[in-house]
Length: 287
Image (cartoon, helix red, strand yellow):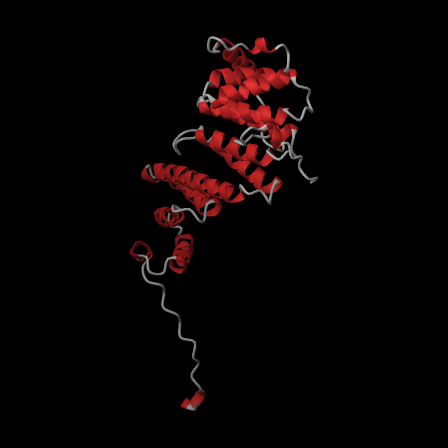
């Protein structure tokens, strides 16, 4: 990938954030939402701030938007940056900064979906910009905030996970790599909890086949999660309930190897089978 353009000079103080991709990169934008946000932002401007008062000068409007952002006037900042996304030429070097500030302003208003979409626009339109990896990370953060608990629909959690992985794939040398990996670990733990709880739901209702599917998913997809061990123990229970003795024994062998001193593993699986004697007597007792 070509060296990314260094256009940080447009940012009075670099305060980057992240996106979500289109097609293979991340996700498609809901244009009606962006249009609604623009209308809402224009109508919510504090008295004394109007986006049309800057004489059609994009540079002056950008400076005013940054000033409103620094003053925590989020509605004014959104209105200014939204107008700039419509007025600036598609390849204008100011546009990445505008998308970034717009995403941050939406985040300050807890408008996580609009924030994620703004960050995504930066990465999609300017993948070589110095803020592209920052925008991807912040987009993942915005989507992650939309999935607050494992029990809720995981659509945005999946999108967040895909966004972080896209960052690692497209920008392997990004300084945000460690934070992205940590975010992936947290999300995978939440997915493990979600699948484990679904397995327990079916196990309690004696729907053992369905329970097995979810427990196996935990073990296969999230082997390093805190719930992997518990899922294997419940798999033993489910297999024994439907008399799949060989499957239960196989899981127990894995558990004994992975958790040799674990009390619950010992109580569930018992001691390891004694090894069969291998010495073969010599005829006549001669050694």
